[in-house]
Length: 119
Image (tube, rainbow, N blue to C red; front, side):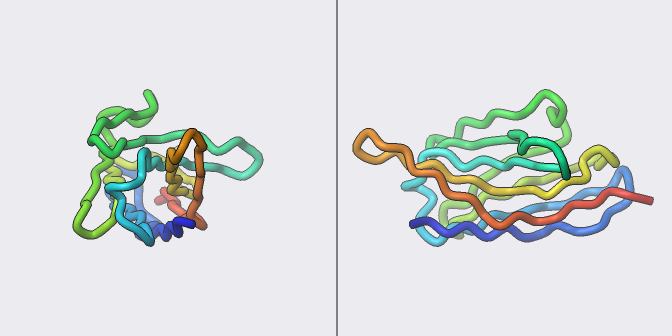
């Protein structure tokens, strides 16, 4: 069982920046993929960015150039740097971990952190 705890959300003005952090309860070196998703009320949870254990990153088109995902293996954290925030970035941001073990996939979610972009 992997526990994920997100932090760093808050209220920020348009054009501002935030750095979200996802802390894992075990070494992230052993976690195959860690992703950030976001969700607004009434809509599905959408993938924002992900990073593999090998360091490969992928981003949703809507956040390219503004969001940067990174990992710190020593701290067991995966951060999401968000720059030039827009009102449409307002959402609850969730961290997700995927572990592949003996042909099975294990998926874990954090509790989410609220990001609100408003003037």
